[in-house]
View 1: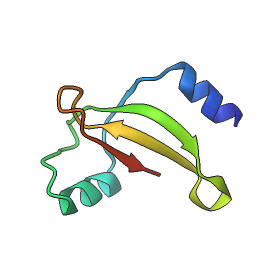
View 2 (view 1 turned 90 degrees about the horizontal axis):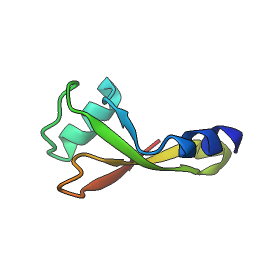
View 3 (view 1 turned 60 degrees about the horizontal axis):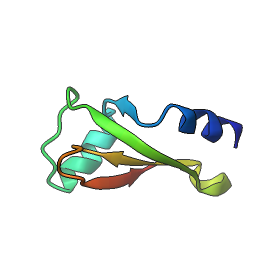
View 4 (view 1 turned 180 degrees about the vertical axis):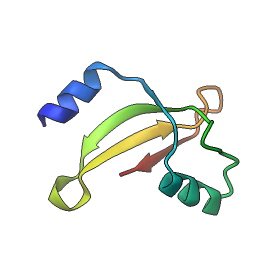
Amino acid sequence: MKLIDEMERYLPIPVYPTKELLQLLRKQRKDISTDTELIITKVFDSGDVGGIVCTILEDEEKKEAFLYH
């Protein structure tokens, strides 16, 4: 919980997608590259099996969010 509390202090957090996330998003027909800035808006603890889950906005104007762990 300490890590999540620390992350929440800095929300929103700008990030860039990893290769694994790019593969997932391309399967969903998202036009994203490694240069696309994404924004972590929320973080959750999904337990021992799932770990930390993030709500990520692709574009603040679109308000389109997805979850990633």
